[in-house]
Image: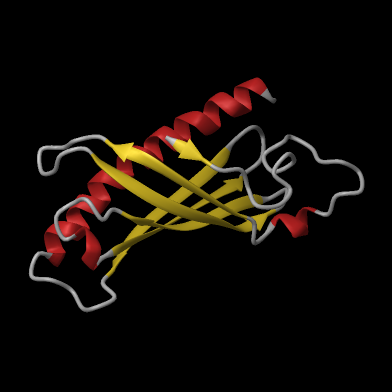
Length: 144
């Protein structure tokens, strides 16, 4: 996997607290790209995924990331873009709520296998969302 840093405020985004002179509102709009090998599944072989994520909210109450992923190496991979969003809300007393979503966009219209593509997206991203939740839990244990 190759992951770039956020395109601005890279050394402050994600820290438990920021420098006194930093306005967290400036974090919104930060972008990062990454590419990684998607593991094989019962439907497809291992393939590269190319993702761009944008920070759409960042404050004491929540953070949200919206992104799109392209997987040109999978069957019909050039026909769709996977859009995902993760919102993590501070619910107080050392707890939070994470809401995740994924949607397929078919820029040139849906192919005949659009239903299978949507199903595959849900299954594939669910595993990634679970890993993200585990990572958030590890992070909060480290920085109470």
